[in-house]
Image 1: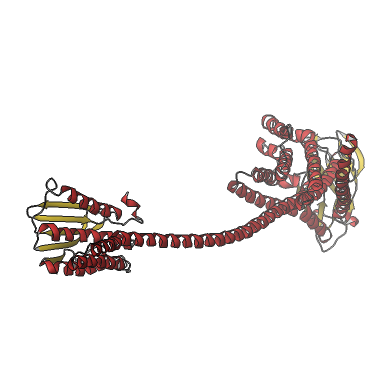
Image 2: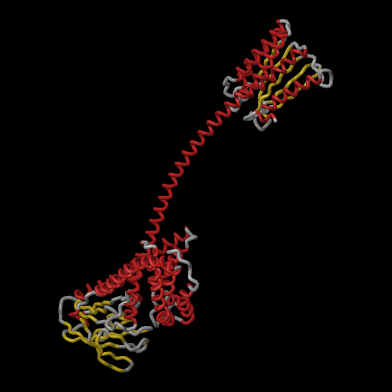
Length: 634
């Protein structure tokens, strides 16, 4: 039963894989068929009316008749190259005549009536096997004569493939030139355009990799593109001229480029690097090392033995990777890249058939031309990935905006709740302070009045107690006024009350503001700060009235600055007899002084008292910033 249960989930998965893989493979078969048909249609129509196919070939000391196209028997013939001898009939005409060679390898020298009119070795790019470069040359009219004219084609072969000569055409230039231009466009201009496009893509990828070092996929693909550009634009060596060994090696770097493309596919699709993945680079490394040591012929031989099979293996790996990715995810990038791999692989098979002479009537290499499909696929894949990343960024941005908006709403609601709580707490604190002030001041006075009235004291005593209670009540009410942080307004009200208090005792109040601004403004000033300061001043004045027998009380207000910021100072001095803390009444004086210091500490101020025979001086130094709560009282 357990085995049946294990097999049951596997069946839907197999069906899913088959439902995705079979249509994909059918599509690839259609692409292969379309590519083969396209290669047939790609062949330009040459002017068959002027074709020369019958030649006499002298090769290896022997002569025999041959029919073009023709493969030589020798792979290396530079000293005694194969010589094709033929004839054509010239009919006198106003238009000039030309000789046209659609395809050859490796180089040709064409002579008409014994005079050389074309030598492809003068154009290095004309001798590249991967370019299929055609050649055309005007025949000087002085060389031609009516009737039969001799033409010889010397074919230089430097391997590793056998030499090949396609059909030769001789006729009016106006009839041959269109075919030449068409082949030049297909096999020369377009590859150069694609190579330029590849170089631009390499620069873009290199910049992307420099900006995003954590994604090596861009750097790998940029390296592959650079190798492709080098292969396209480095001039090939033309024997027997001495050439750079490095140039010969770079021309044979196709297996390294193919291995880098496989690495790109693995990284692009997020696959894990295989254990033996480094083996992909072994053929390219061998071609590079042996080519530098052994010289130009060796890279071409090794490229034929190692490079070409390795390119095919890499293409098969790419086909497998893209097919697996299509089955897994069915994304646009893997689908497009898989179609391009099918095109390139078909063209690679075509080139192998041509290289090994299985296709006996032509040798046209189209792999480099088909590589444009890979460029299109890679560009499309990167664009698709970039567009998907932009969509993800946009989605993330919209989600982020929504979340930020929701967070702002929650934050506003939280601020409102906190503000309401703070308002309630402030109101509760203010109520507590007001109740404490009323209890400590007015409550005590009212209790005293009640006690005096119950003991049948004299009216004057009760009146004094009532006035004191009324004074405390006014103090509490005045502290509730909004003074905007200006303590001078509260001190002005206190001055009026103090003057009225001292008038019955014939004590003068001298008011002196030492600085123009009086005291600094304190925006953080609260009503309970004002009450503590006023009560300290009341206590100082009351002590002077009761104990000092003073005739004058001087109040000095000023702003001082110790370098750390301005602060206010209020001084109360009398001209009484003073008192001694060590003498009589020390306990009462000490209690009063502790109360004054405690009130000063609650509002962050510092109190200093000095008394001698010339009078008593109370100095209250206000803080630069008042505390937020009376927790400062300790």
